Image 1 (tube, rainbow, N blue to C red):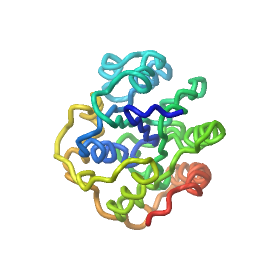
Image 2 (image 1 turned 180 degrees about the vertical axis):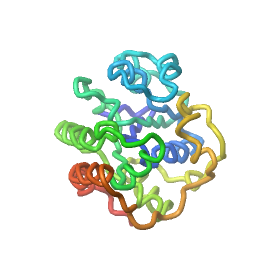
Image 3 (image 1 turned 90 degrees about the horizontal axis):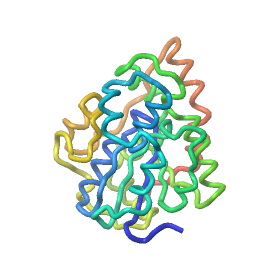
Length: 245
């Protein structure tokens, strides 16, 4: 059973998926405490990946994922709603997901061609695991089997029509939509992880959601093959996405 106070919402996505803009949106409600990627340090320690500002990330968070859980499930957060921004690739296969049954889970998805192109522009050709598509589908199946199934929303639907998309999402998770979710103050925010200095430049310049995305980027070579490999997992999850009213 989900706890009633606070209403805890976990948004699960891969990188370059509108996830920080969604954290800004929920943070702008005024009744929501935001948590930014709380398992990132554990992920870096376990994988040894040389991510930007790696040492800063590890110093900023608990290094054991189990130490993170109380803040996501039982400890007070000071607001009626807690919004948790999570990256699915941070949840390594041996990490227990049973705690997610206590909270409302949303899966944020984006077409793999757009994700691959955006990530490559920042850091070069990614490893498929870093983009999280297969892991997201694994997690969806596990959570759905335990019940209830996560709610799924596509970032393209949010960018195409932010107000209807957020209204539909809020209805689906049992909270009231607020117009304040459509805009926010520019610049860094207090809840941002230390990695924001590397990854949040675009969202820090923003004051709301960008407009609808255009045609899919034309990819070639290894990047095109990567997107083709990731698309089946995307399509499996996309089959469950919210129909925006």
